[in-house]
Image (cartoon, rainbow, N blue to C red; front, side, top):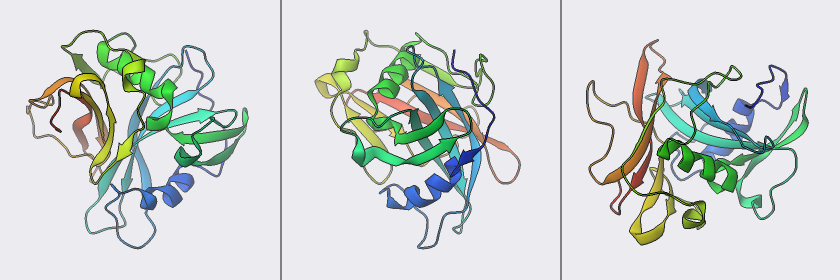
Length: 221
C-alpha cells in the first residue's frame, strides 16, 4: 500500500494546477486566474510502489458558477520518457525530494490501475490516509477482461474531458468537468460497459456525486 506523507510541497498541487488548468480545452473558467480548492478524490496504489496515483477533484470559484474538475495525477521521482507534453510541473516534496507531476491520462501506470479498478481487481484508496479503502468510490464492469495494451493510444482532450481509444471502438472516457447526478439517477451511461463514480464537496457545504470515468462501447456518454 502507498504511504501518504503529510509534509510540505513547494509549489503546492493547487498552485501547479492554477497555472495548468487554463491551458486545457475542457477548462470553462474565464480569462482570470482560477481560484481553486480541493474538493475530493481518491488514490490508487502502484503495484511497484514507485508512482503516486491520485484522482483529485478541485473546484474553481473564479467564474459565475463554481465548477468542479477531475484531475488524475501521477507523481514520479524522475521524468517519464516521452511524456513532456503531459507534465503539469515539478514540486519539492519534504520527504521524497523532487517530484514530477503528470496528467495521469498519459501515464501508463495510472491507466493500468484505472482499468484494474473498473474490473474490480483493485480498490480505490482514501486520498489522505494510508492503507484505507475509499468506500464512496463505486465501479462496475460487464465486459470481458481488459488489457493495458488495448489502451496504449495517446489520450486526447476535448471540451468535456479526455478519451483513450480501445479495441473494437471502445473508449475510456474521463469526465473532467464534473456534473452532479440527480438523486437516485443511474450513473452508468446507456452505452457503457463500465464506470467509476465518486463524491466531492461543493462550496455550499453539501456533497455531490457523479460519474468520473466511463468505459463506452462506442458512442460518447
